[in-house]
Image (cartoon, rainbow, N blue to C red; front, side):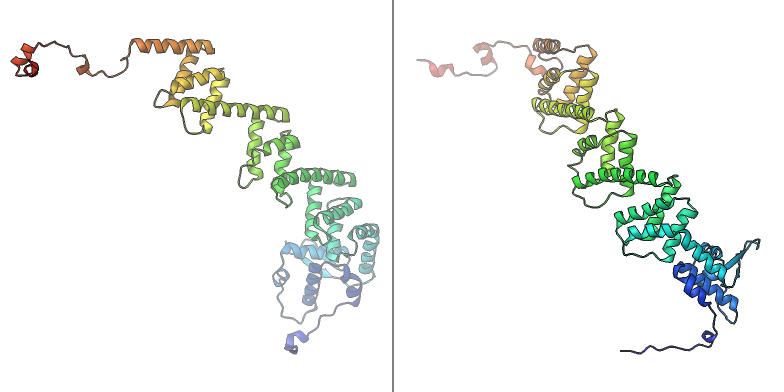
Length: 407
């Protein structure tokens, strides 16, 4: 085993006296940063050192950290912050006497009931002085009730486990305080609402076989869907069926689907099912029409929108549209011909199947009477014909070989 080698330095033999009462009475409950700042400052005021006088730089802290540390010690009577120092933080170290010790004892006595409540939810875990200081700040700075503070600790342990970091608990307390939620009843109500929201969002993730907890962004979307737009969990479940075909289902894709329903005012499960039935009907109509038109491909999204236009805006029923598909099957571009036929019927007010059928029959009759209408005619086919006798052909030198058949 290697030995520990200590390198002696002359400066280190200069001592900084620390009051034993500080170590015994004040240090155990003090935050770590506060202890570092106090001791480093004590070294500076004791003299006989060439150490850097900028405490924040020397300890790799911010100016705010240093000021907060000295504010902590000022409350305990260990230092005094001198006001009106021209923007500088001027601190006077005070003797550690009965005032400082009694201040800490008073502070412990003041929060004795809170500490007991915290210990009841913490189990075997003991909070450090720095952690306790943050919880005291919830009460002294953010005006939370003691019972409310204990409830925040209990809730965070239930969410994150017994070793949850104090910074997480601190962020929860600050968020609730910013929203004006300071009492035990209101905090419990807020946590219950969060539980409902988290449960609903978690159920969506479970549908996708995702086992993690919902993120803050996902919870925000769920709040928008349920509280702002008015979707129930059943309604969201209906929209989830449209996300099944996606390789990586996510809340943003689901948000886009729900936005399309919301834009048409369909937020109830009944209305959403009506929309789905309508979409299925349009899809089936397009499929049947393409078959009758002789088209081998599937209808695209833009194709289905065209069918929606014919059904909803033009008021055309399926029989008329399928008739147009049959008539268009004879053309080189069947779908373009379908659009032409249906638009013509709409413009001329033909809205019933019988009227469309009669119009189609008239067009066929007209086409039969004028077979070359609209077509290029080969003039050689209509050249005047003339009959020639055998004598005429002989004059042209054409012998049909009649002599071969003479007796």
